[in-house]
Image (cartoon, rainbow, N blue to C red; front, side):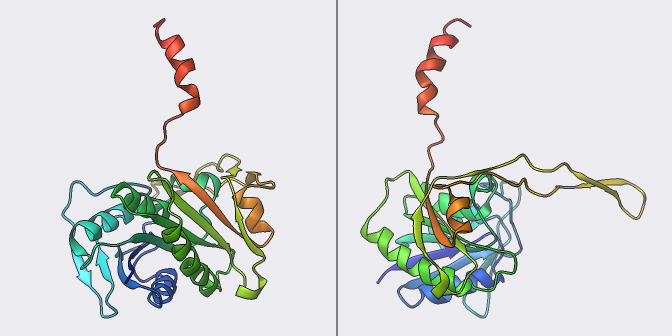
Length: 249
């Protein structure tokens, strides 16, 4: 029996995690552990200054007062009744493409699974209304089976972005690279009721590198995008160049 750990960054009550857990439960034993609130944009942050607490919900899910990374770490180390074979994070409400991956708690949850030695997938639904979580869940089951049969290198995860379309309208799957956005818009400055300045993040940048071969391009054409991401952030191509000039410092 396959054991799967499911988590996310949208929170334990998000529709995406229910769709994902329900679908994966048809092929595996699923343990669902997720933040007790929306933690979008949390990236790989850990909670270091407060204790983590858990709350078991009526549907069997476990809510944690921590980040997505906390949830996966705690689940694998303490909460899963059986060692998971794979970690699946999602289904995120919105894209995790291009530069988004640096900030994404969805990606971070999968990365933590990889850090702890498990294959991992992050899956997101891309669109404005987000009506078709079942499409992403359907393909999540297929990709899980495929990844377990064809493992990646130990330093890689899969980042999957699914267009918000009915299942029959999906054109297929493309293996892609990350695209890129223009720089984000400026901060939005307003005032609180006491007249003090407050600031909100502005809109994300528009797509810049979004042509053929990118995750942006594939999803725009109605394809599912699968991008292998490397956990090792080393810029290997710059090592020799850097070594040459640092000797002069």
